[in-house]
Length: 88
Image (cartoon, rainbow, N blue to C red; front, top):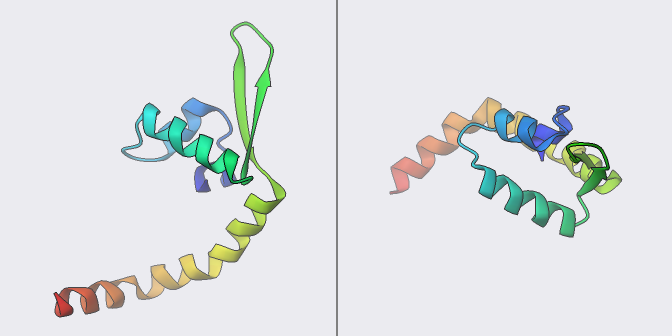
């Protein structure tokens, strides 16, 4: 979903934007995000047919809501990982 939020709208661009993401996994996740109402799939009738994805309003608001948590994890992620390792 973040790849779409950063501007990747075609399937191949989404896959390329996420390291280690297979075509199969990307297709599955995009279907799940679409079913959840977070991503919209649009088929462009051209030759060859193009499929574009974009975040819905709910998807955009979810990205905005997650930004503080993402910033926290970048700042304190090492601390949280260290605590998990100490308790293992």
